[in-house]
Image (cartoon, rainbow, N blue to C red; front, top):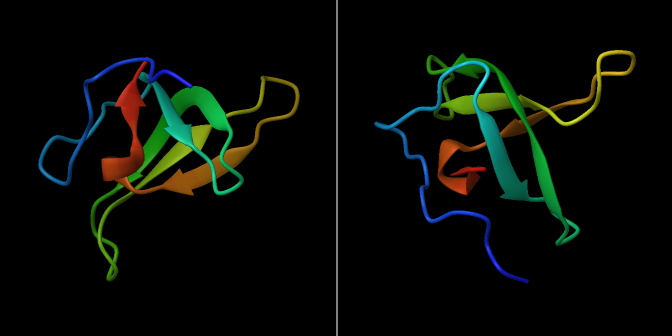
Length: 71
């Protein structure tokens, strides 16, 4: 499986809301979605909420910034 892009995010390089991103889920499948929100104030570090659903049925998944790549 080829990666979509080589542009990865980090704790200092956070994605903006509305950015299309991709990441590998725990089951090994590649998922894409839009950034819904960024929480930098968490006690366990920053998290990014990614919407991988659609408008009628949104599905938010919290992902570490280091797991995201730009699509």
